[in-house]
Image (cartoon, rainbow over all chains, first blue to last red; front, side):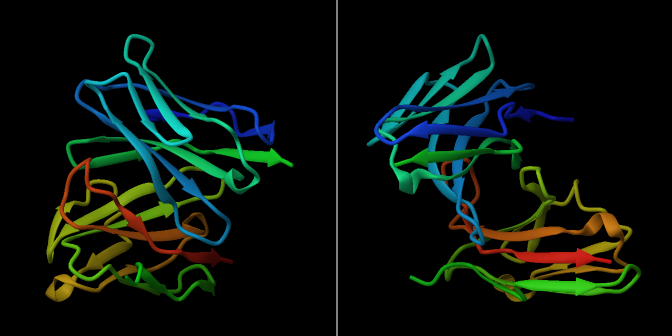
Length: 110
Length: 115
């Protein structure tokens, strides 16, 4: 029962360019979507979120887009920095239930 | 502000043995979560507490896993007996209240290896 899918296990971008991380989901109507970032040997940390009534949320260099018709979520990081290198998890929250994707490892090269 | 504390950080046991993990949430956080993260997968929610009551444990394998949060603060997660497939990182998280807009803060996790 994979309600959240991140189909790209890894992504590599050059410093200063845009990073786009993608996520597909199922079974949603009033879900809330979140992105978490995880460094090695640390727990995930919250990055940005969006409710299902919106299609965009922005916080500094990070923007999340929600395409409800395609059931697709994406995180844009502009400009990318080497410190952004981490594993990014897409999450879906509904009725006390949180589901995460398998994660995408982002590497930002100097 | 101190973050979520977990211990031990690493644990190696043999199958059929028992193991327990401890979590101390951020002070004042009413909601506490336990997740299991198997290598190559995202965190999977096992159980969540609101104060000392269980909100949801639908994904907890209750034949071998148990969890408690006495006095609504610290929590322990136990596996008895452990199986090979229990090898994973066990993450504890806490939030001030319960809901999608309330950020979950994660601890560093306990890496369990079952041989």
